[in-house]
Image (cartoon, rainbow, N blue to C red; front, top):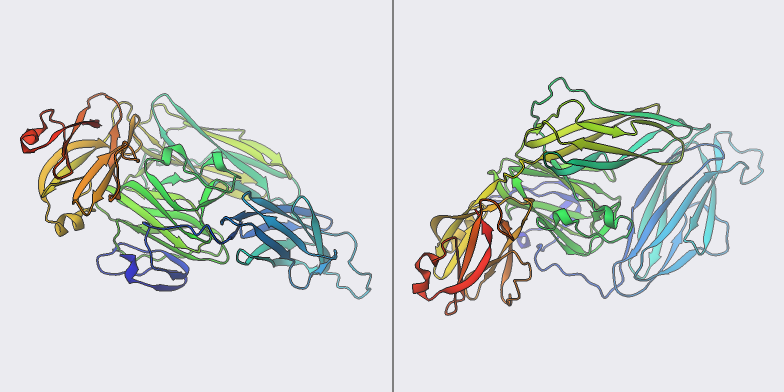
Length: 564
């Protein structure tokens, strides 16, 4: 459906079209294409750099700060690269820094320091200028550049030349006449503790660092709220971070997202989050609610990003994203409460997807003492402090909870949003699955609104509720997938993404319709599958007799799983 449009964007503009949902496009032109069929060009070498910009903060006399860029080869052939220092800086060596990038990521380290001695002994130098040295290091070789700069903020560009597309990277810093004060930085600023059940604990670690000079003194506490227990209209935050792949350069789905999220294309990772590179890539995320927003950050050279829900566009909302800072963009709200699919497409973007906010459940406040913080205070100069935030699930009803943990310091304040969902113990919510029939095909869906186009176009007849599946994330369950064969005009359903050993040639993957039990859970029953060899059609029912389909040429084809 996206093939019909080409949208030219300067920063972040939404386009509203009839019968569509909503689009977020950032810096560039949204190209023709869709999530399905996106392919990687692994023949040509492609140089990817993350991050695209490093902010070093303040640098006083005789002080220095270090950072690192990660170079990644997204193609299959080696990349020969070289880096040039900023314009106007003097190279202290005879040759600039070069290297060959193969299949493993490589770190380009950078050290910026304000020198004690002037670069030249000219008496006429301004008292408000300082000699600055920038050192680039790959571990095997380093080069240095020098320049006299005035006090204040600076943003310098380095040029990476290669046979895998040229890149520009940036460094920011502020020169000060005296040692600057401490500046607190807490990361991440949003914490997703997932689903917590009665009697369980969940914890997450955040980092506290000092972006300034001198000693940072900090303390942390849960923000008091006089309206404890009252709901708030905020979306439930779901993080996409995978700490297991942090620093590897390649993103992979964490285990708790594998049933609800799919990736196409070659994703890199930044601090454990999925990051887009220069190739086509796509992300699909299935959620249960009435709306969704996306948390992301855009790199300086931008790119194209499109986000929509249920293959449609509907509302038009303003979206403003900075060149670098994290932002939240509302994709759509006001949907019918049910199972929906978010799709994010991009071509040539440099964007990190932090997570999503899911609307449809009001956030509750917990009881005093339900969140513990340790350590809850500390001091830091250049080291990193790790702080554990833990929730103890006791005396809390089921629902979505959110609290703010405040970090106060002599270098400013930072607030961390902490959220989790309290489960109902052994009771799990279920999805009504409706059955529609058209010829030999049976369409099973938990969201008739999302499948309305299919139902109307092919003249399906509604036959009522066939069974009930579980919502994603229910323990003991797994996603129940759906495929369609346009030639035979029949569908196949299975919890095995590979089709349980059956040939899926000619079938088109249509996603999931909910979660199904892989073993006999409390208050569940088998879902029987019946197969008609003459038509290739399959019929699913909880009736062990197949609702009379044995007389229609069907034969028993096993148990597809366990449902309600």
